[in-house]
Length: 214
Image 1: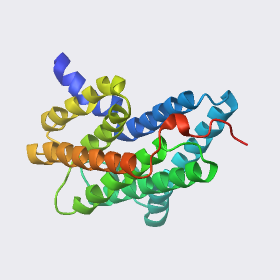
Image 2: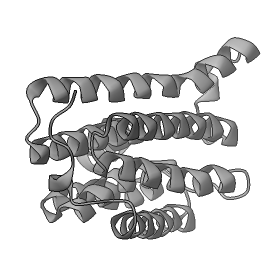
Image 3: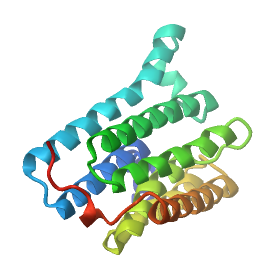
């Protein structure tokens, strides 16, 4: 295999969408914590809360395999609207749980904003899945990178990952051009719309958020 072929084959595994969503969320969490000048204990509490919420994302998938007895390896091969639905259910659990925790403890507005965007892109992703195999890799790699860039332009290099993900899906014959490019455009439009809605409505400047936690 050529170097290009090797790189394209492993690219979606190295930059797995779920990993990117988690890493992007933690990066935004740290960014907001730093702006608030909160103490180190506050950071640890927030990370632990988010990791706990993230673990809940596994519940729908685990329940599916326990109840059906399906083979995980076979079930995750190729494209399946059932697996897309399970992943989407997990993402909605993470988004809603994280949003509630951050609102309950008043830890800031930026991460809840990203969770709203995550939920917003997840709905059309799973809704279209049975009739149009929109790319989840493109959707979930673009969301965190774009949202972070909207929050602070210094994060723009992260956009390279979803930009490369589009031709990657075509190269691996995982999606058609319409499915890959459509996912990019749809996710971009929804993310930008949600961000500006949050900024204009519920988000307040991060430096105004409470720095001290009880």
